[in-house]
Length: 448
Image (cartoon, rainbow, N blue to C red; front, side, top):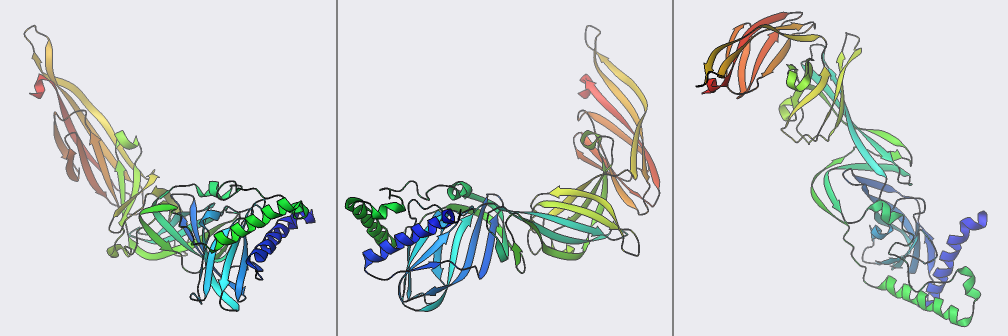
């Protein structure tokens, strides 16, 4: 088992020896050290994360070969890139090569004019990292303001641990030409190489085979010194970038909750809606606010997610659960209306009190070709809560040809469109109100 584990490294060293022989210079093989500073930029609309990884390399003057392995990860080897953070005028980083017969291994060829520690930044795309935003809202006892806490749950299934990483999140659509996970799992980064190289035992094979290996090694070395090729991986549309403050260690296979923001005293409005055609017989509770400065927000858009809302129940700050809602991306200055679900402590009861028809009209043959359909309703609205509430009662009618007469405590009245009206009532603590309306629907020639 131990021999099987070290074989890829032995092959890599053998290839490096060939390269040094072809270049007639001593080449050092450097194994990539651990990361010093890591930044993750996670795109949620596509399974792609940009990793910026700062590391310290120990260089010698002359040719250096850096070994980079991505075995067991979802790193896209075709996206690997390296830039010196210091001594840029003295460090030449040539193209990365991928030895045949050795999986998940790349060799960077570096010409250094300095000896010692050199900081570099390695960038690449990986797959398997994702994020999801969620929020906690805590209402005051009178439910006029709310403390809003934002969190982000980052999940890592990339195969790589990311210690003390700064996390940045992208909201917006991204178009990619290739799926990163597929690129990461190819046997060879750019397809099967040609010509093929025999296994390690071929180093003691006949002269013609050894010459073929030497020729391929020279080709690799020349390719490493050529101008690097640029590969376009993706195009971006409009997006918004979020940077999570501080750093966090995100091990592979873990999900980690990161704090996003905390805002206190956000003014909110409670509204209860009743509309049979949309919500059935239940009253539905809504909580609304605006993503602007007046509501202590408005610095950035709010990523889509799920919010759980609680209410302060007593002076000891115990909480009672109110409900939860999902919402889409909220731009700055946009109104927010959260559907918190059914509200059993507010009731709306419309009752049909009277039904009749009248005003018949007839055609030449004596058949009915028009009439009025008259319905009288009584609507009872009850508030069992210990705070005042506002209730919207929306009524939908079958067509625009009708007449409406109202009576009682119906509050504010609005005609929303040709066949929809809305009554808005303000109810006191443990209070109730009642109103009536008569709806006369015109049929047939009566509509004229």
